[in-house]
Image 1 (cartoon, rainbow, N blue to C red):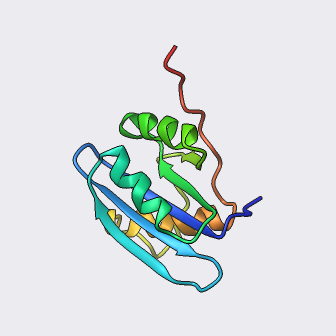
Image 2 (cartoon, rainbow, N blue to C red; image 1 turned 135 degrees about the vertical axis):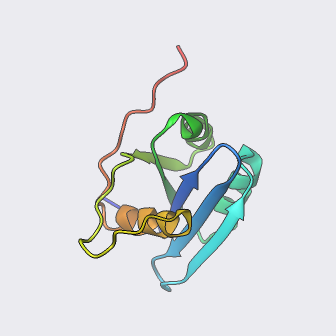
Length: 119
């Protein structure tokens, strides 16, 4: 069950990360393009109204980030790369993926994927 105030969707790529933070009390949506540096992403998360929970589309570029965020005490969910979309929503863009992920997390519509361990 979603209990945090802010849900954050991350569209993670090797060279950039698109972040969208949805404040569930005010409905405000904050979007930023970030570097893939873990410190940059963690700083963005800590600047949002807390507590916050994060979701990203599962893939090899995000597994290290998921481990880092979990170690930092931030709930992080890896979502399947194939996510629900409405029938009329056929165009997939990076700009739209992060808010879509944040909304799905807020609605508890994300089935988590296991992040592989380093061992």
